[in-house]
Amino acid sequence: MNKERKVQAEQEPLDLKKEIWEWIKVILIAILATVLIKTFIIVNAEVPTSSMVSLIDPGDRLVGFRLSYLFSDPERGDVVIFKYPVDPRQKFIKRVIGLPGETVEIRDGEIYIDGSDTPLVEDYLPEQWVVANDGIVYAVPEDSYLVLGDNRNHSMDARFWPEEALRTGVATTEEEARSYSFVNRKQILGKAIFKYYPHIKKLS
Image (cartoon, rainbow, N blue to C red; front, side, top):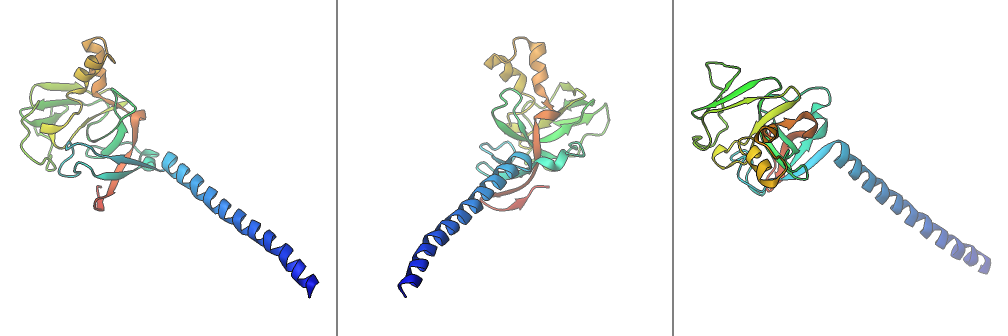
């Protein structure tokens, strides 16, 4: 009987160590999977402003899919998460308006692509566009995109980034500053798919 108790006492520490090690492995795998998913598959973002109302409200948190543009390019109308050209440490969320190589004209609150007589249909705008809405022409570089917020009267977007680049010293001349109007393809982190806080809502 004493011998059996001794064997059992020796087995219990071994079983406890094995169980602890199994839990450690599970935790490590979970951490590794989370890091890999956040690095290569999804991107999280929080929207602090009203620039994308009414699609996205201030304080909403959303998820973007990094692999959306692995085999295809962003399309007009896509809502994308990207590194802010003037300060790449910040993540911005805007809608793709101009594609590589296009000429985009903003005229009297309407957008015209490549000299078209018909304005772009933008039924996602929450109100009449009256701020910085006329006399602006963009020649989008081949490797870049023009993006604007949906809430144009309250959006810090391509229309104002050159001025911000000059103000912060990122650009030293107006010509250099104009290049900050565009988001380079490499700066796009992913396509916004859905918001999960405070309510779940599909964005595309």
